[in-house]
Image 1 (cartoon, one colour):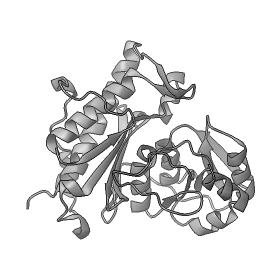
Image 2 (cartoon, rainbow, N blue to C red; image 1 turned 90 degrees about the horizontal axis):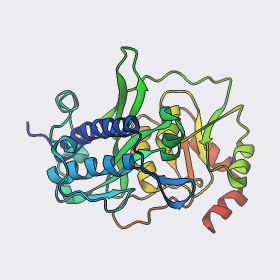
Image 3 (tube, rainbow, N blue to C red; image 1 turned 180 degrees about the horizontal axis):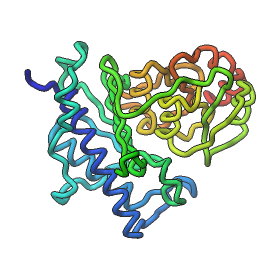
Image 4 (cartoon, rainbow, N blue to C red; image 1 turned 90 degrees about the vertical axis):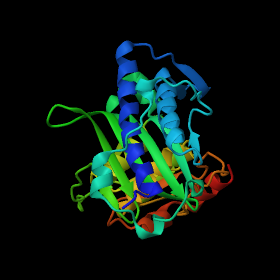
Length: 308
């Protein structure tokens, strides 16, 4: 049976995310981070961001020239990409072990949008919080996040190997991580490490968590939910962009969780949407009532978000 566009794209994205992770590690080892500020002191870009994005976008666009690809680092130069940065092979295990969900079988390249965050958690990367760093590749169809890849370049596997790749596709499932049962005696929430403000505090106070885990990167926060380490991810601020949430949303929802804005509305991921997630992020693990948390967020917080 011929491989469908979506399955081939997922397989290539898995391979490209792994290669990008290798590039990120190599640049850190070299010490040549070449850090620049984009929009402020907490919005950094390094050579690892730029090179990882070149790798991903060049690899995907070569195989899928008609897919719209939107990357965090803008129009990163993708011509004349060195051969060792260009990924041409799909992940064989993914392709051979999985079948395309029926609703995605007949779609064309033009129906898809790919959102790329080549290095989610750049501030953490520069500060040495390497566990927080992820590579995110999200796939959207009909404005909805349907598939995604999260790669952790610095994850330490039990066998001594470094790096871990998680994937999810709605209608198919997820793979690449182990999930434990949530502790029902606690209510653990993960939130921002570096963008804490009064709105975030007010939202957290309203839902009264027993513990708050402050970590960097949207990808790493959602991993807390996937692995059963946290019940919810609450971020009542406008710091995230579509490339931060497309892949995590698709994977979390393929696993049975939910990711929306702070008012419970799903973001749209079509090619012409604005990039900022102006109404924050609210995500819940499977078996946690998303609507209950939406209802607990104060009206004043929601109104402050929508008026920004």
